[in-house]
Length: 287
Image (cartoon, rainbow, N blue to C red; front, side):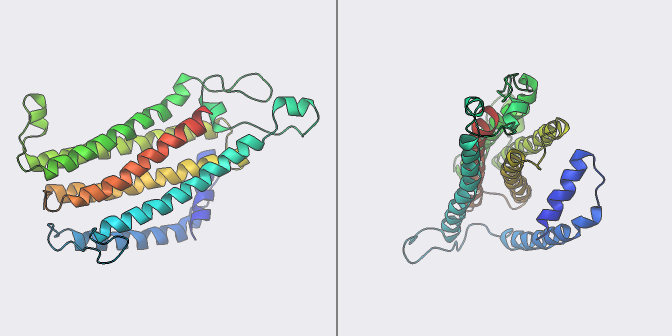
């Protein structure tokens, strides 16, 4: 309920327009309630060391961990959410008037500028003068793509290290970063967290550039772009919050082959976020 006012206030702040911070009240209240609920879930999970994992007893998930089955159902719902964003974008792009249609009088000229015209080098525009972007403007999105791919790898390394029964510290410089199994799991999680944090920072830099260039949420193309990439950014931010908990637990209780499934379940979510961006980047930034 507080998201519309939050979005409006945030848009005004990014655009340099005077914003009423009082409009953030409802969204901040909702965020507080959500944070309290998540904190209570963390409190209940922290002492868990792998004993008495709940197992499904009926079809279609019989024999599977209930948490894992629930996460897959959640991911399926997330696929449908992002599919609506992606399909609306494709529908908009394919039904826009092309230059030859305008010249033939088949449709009226419309504003066809998209985020890719402001970001990618030589982006095509209706007037044929070329886009506004260059290599440096598309660089944050490109770096973010590789950052998320690498972060998926580091979360896999964290899980592999946690479940390794005969783990040995590597030699050389890596041995100093990963001196023992417990520290190795924690440091792999920290690496994942840092890569995800870099994604958020570069996303804000990119949005600031787009808003400064006049590409705002007030247009059809802008609304689809900011809602789609913003929803993905929210998923990354939520993942970072969960990762803070994983890092804290790795440094205190620790993860091993008994309770390493906690990292595995989060990894499924993180891989989905990574995959969603791999689809979003070429469609929204290069097309």
